[in-house]
Image: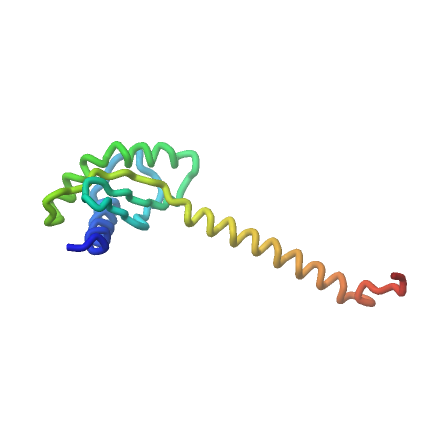
Length: 131
């Protein structure tokens, strides 16, 4: 099995585990497994997770996820036919936060452009005859 297929299968199975089998009360908000990157020797896997929820609970959620990695590995052993199940490292991926920030910046720039265009389209286009 090649590494891309392994990453894809781990992503699929971890998504199901996150959704249906983690019942830790410290885990809040909505979590999405975005990507899994497994080392070449299959001993470790970085699991990139996005978080949508109350920022004050984000750190507690990711600490809880990291403490559940042993349990997640045991669940993966039952689901995935692999000789070695990698040790998992949970990494918060801020892709959604970054995308929202960029969208907000674009919206702000568009509003400023509209405001400037309106200002110059009203009256004489900002030209009062002076230089």
